[in-house]
Image (tube, rainbow, N blue to C red; front, side, top):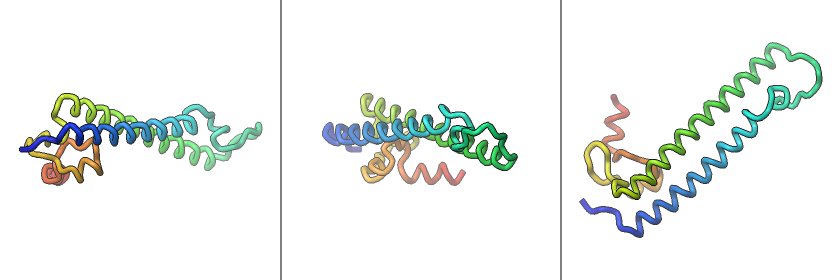
Length: 126
């Protein structure tokens, strides 16, 4: 099994750092729009009038949806950080299950991939 070259690892590190920057930016945007605003500010209604129940439900749904997105972004950050650690320890690009190589095409598409395509498919079928 041929390992990735130092240049390839350096290129993947750049890809991962760029992706991490994008995820942090997205997370910050979600945070600014959802977590730092009150429900009235988020809906654009700053008047003193009370909400209609349907408006409150919609606002709550939007807030929960945004919190779910933020949670997914946090998970993505963890996975990208983990990929950076694997670059440093030499295990990047090696499948956790079969110990075979993960294709460069897959790593470019999913830089945090820990499994080759075959093992990922088997895992998803379970």
